[in-house]
Image (cartoon, rainbow, N blue to C red; front, side, top):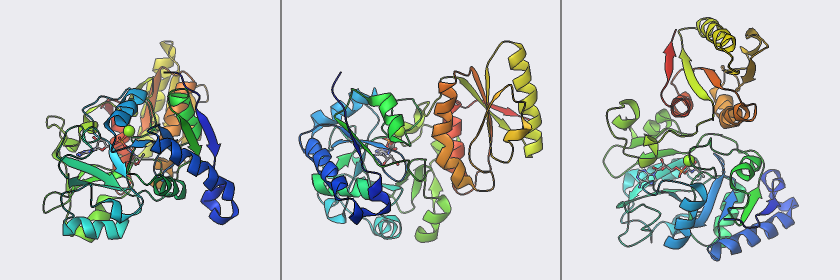
Length: 358
Ligand code: TXA
Ligand code: MG
């Protein structure tokens, strides 16, 4: 796989769509490539997606190949208007309608019963289909111009942290895809919430940008997939079983009742590892970064008082640890409330479940 990857900068569209007509020209070029069954990476409000025509099985095959993704892991189909939904799904349950009204466009993916015979490869042969309408002007304009449902996993090599900038996409996929639309850094920074709406109560299969509290606010009730919390149960979302989002260094999550507790333990473990010849990375926050000895690689991941900022910086910080070639990463942990559930889920995956309790 070695192709010339086009690179279009369209970030000005995000602030002022009308002032940047050339951006739309670039988006049309990208959309034409999608129509020709080529792969194009594009920004969404969560992370960058690696897009391809969802209805062409051979194109979807190329997505799996470019990412090195296990082929039993189905993709999310991205749409730009609700009319695109009907040909894809067997039904739109009332529960789905109210969630769509409340959160689309936005970081919510709904798992529908699939219309038989459609998107076989994108759904990895399941009889359900995951669909979302992203809330990013570049993503919406691209899908609209292509006139296709766009299958798009996160635009990273499988197993690497998801990309939140076009530069991250370049690091992983340059030469492997036809083009990259650079719309600047993504806003939310963690992926969409995946919700199964095929039963009476919505079930969260992957925590993300929309919180459980928000879903319950509309649906009256919400459940978490037991596979998310109990390692002995297989998760219903095939992607959740893989070690994901992983930096190259070994990573441990340090759990404690207080930040003081965590900081003391992290410092002790870091100093010991350094004495053993290891280069140590510490994932701190803006509030705590200065507490750690400067001989370690200390990176602040947002503010503890605003977990949205932690979500926003998470994957970039994990990639920075890779760039600095640390052997061991010790990470502070966060309360599992609101977007903290998604942050802790991704940290847990990145660490491969390794936790140290103070
Ligand atoms: O924010 C996002 O959702 C990003 C952006 C690009 O939209 N996309 C993304 O896609 O995260 P991906 O492929 O990295 O993750 C899709 C997740 C996987 O965990 C997959 O197993 C799950 O959705 N999924 C897809 N189809 C499913 C289905 N029919 N039933 C259950 N889970 C499904
Ligand atoms: Mg992904």
